[in-house]
Image (cartoon, rainbow, N blue to C red; front, side):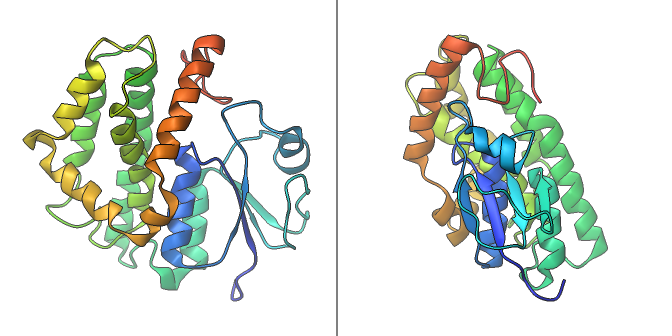
Length: 255
């Protein structure tokens, strides 16, 4: 693909998964359109009917004319779900952006890191915040990811989509732990203790890694802690009523 086509991203600001894709797009410095699809209430009917039958975000449309909410993408366009698949695609069509390193060894290391994040962090996040598991359920997995980081810099030296896979979760964990109100099934005092642990010498490397990512323009443009905290409070209220974390995930399962 020699000529860059129009990129349209269906995303929810409250979700870490579309955030992964936005980080990659911002790092690549390419134009793209965003169509918002909230997970805090029932998704709009048009999204599942006209765009993606599974109605999950992120969802990327590559090519075709400008889309508005409710429009059906052209069948001639490439349409991709799944944040990790989308970011691999972006790395392939935007080689000059260096979203993945050129060196095959480093690319393999990046993918292994992504695999570890996918296997460990989301289940630990749900287990700690929504299933009443002890703080070490989350902290141990974060420490495991920390141990995979190099002594300085990003996952494979220069920033890559391996960092995009992890930082949306890390940022949300940090922001949510600051809140006073948490899901009622959380162990009393667990959030404060976990937050203090993340600021302790045990997680010194992770603290520096987070600071390095916060300083990047891509994070500054895609991250609003106050909005994430506000949306989490709404999510907790909805969860108490429905037993679902959002429209995709329940408190008893991780998809």
